[in-house]
Amino acid sequence: MTTNDWRARAGATFVCEKNPVHGARGMVVTNHPLASAAGAEMLAAGGNAIDAAIAAFFMLSVVEPMMVGILGGGLAHIRLADGTHTVIDGQSTAPLATGPTIYTRDPKAPAGTMETIGRKNAIGPTSVAAPGNLAGWCEALARFGTFPLADVMEPAIRHASRGFRVTQYLCECVADSAADMVHDAEIAALYLPGGAPIAPGARLVTGAYADTLRSIAEEGPGLLYGGALGRIYAAHMAQSGGYLAMADLTGYRTVTREALRGTYRGFEIVGPPPPSSGPLHIIQMLNILEDFDVGALGFATAPTLHLLAEVLKIAFADRAAAVGDPEFVHVPVAKLVSKSYAAERRARIDRGRAQSWSAGVAADESAHTTHLTVADAMGNVVASTQTINSLFGARYIVPGTGMIPNNYMFVFDPRPGRASSVQPGKRVTSSMAPVIVLRDGKPAYALGLPGGLRIFPSVMQALSNLIDHGMKLQEAVEAPRVWTQGYALEVEASVPGNVVQALRDMGHEVATVGNVAGGMCAIQFHDDGGMTGAACWRADGTPIGLGGGYARKGVRFRPEAGR
Image (cartoon, rainbow, N blue to C red; front, side, top):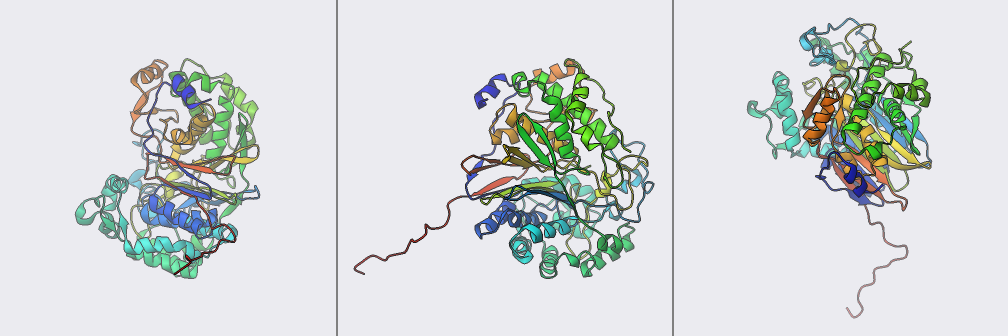
């Protein structure tokens, strides 16, 4: 299907706001230009995609501090040049001092939210889970990278020390979080100078964080997981009423998991398994859609958006009932990804009317995250999503360190007896979906994005844009999105009014929003070995491609004769 074909059938059209980038020797796509540059620097120096990804993440912890940091958690999906896939689960875990009754859900909380009395699970030390990012990043580098830790951290230390220019996006995130940040002197001094959000274009220097990064570069991750930095962190928690203790740091371990796989119209979808719910439900939803001619129905038409809404509601009903840390609950993975189960659910869809859905299986999070997608010329690919959960995490700085803790306890269900209820040592259930898509066993696409519960629905829609509607990569990541988990159907504002009205006529409660989820970072792989990188308008995303190459063997410089 050509680009003209999808536009001819579309219920909504749009103009891309960014341009894709092409490269033959490597591609780095992150949600900040300096992070993409840090990754590209590693590739240019002869490093591989893993070196580039970890350099980019340390840089993101400096320039995108509202989204990610070393005290957060996340998932790395790595495909090596030999075709093997490895998932490093560096997700946060509930402190050992917690339990299913430590929080009380606020009876006034909106439907579908996890707010608790006193916001104890949302801000401050009582919202903090054990950090996994630093452990996960360092493990990925040690196992699959080629550069020393100090080398990949150097760009982040450089920019934390000398400063960088604040973007409008960062400024708006500060404004959104200011009411909480103002109560902590250290975070307010950086991001609320004079009591107002730091202005776009201002230079932000984070010297204390630079010092912390230098110490980690010298001593390694053990500095946090049992060393001097960990002792400072644990002492702060003990003094401020947090649940995290030294035992949580010394006992933290990443988990290496086998990737989950599914198929859709000749493509293979590969991504992390539970406790990540993302790829699980992407495969489930695509299985349901596979029997519909989505391309013929048209992009962003009422019939297509109605189908998307119904499969989203099905997925979220099953997610709430049965998806959690597989060490604590039985997750019926085989059933959820089976074609037969998809057929059962598909048969109940009313093509003309919205309906409520209950779970079809049983068991025995935040919109503020970051994602990167990186590939090198050797065939290594990294799709990785990392976070401190909410904007600016727990919304304070560990005194004297520059580190912003996560508020990952907000992801757990504060009610006992649920698949994602709080239990000591339990990993959070996330919607992260760092996906690599294969065609005939070779990478075709790699993509992911931030956005909490809106992550995997957005990845699913991007894949449908590419496979069903034949969009170009830039179009697929920037296209209007929809989202629902069973309540209001969120529709981005570029979907026209007549389509919105048609959805309402079908029984959907439609809410028009500025954006669904965050900035998608994607790479397309071409048969000639080239790559295309694309990032969307929903963040400061920037693709940087490496082209050119080294001199031809045997070339010699010969000065002009006669001089």
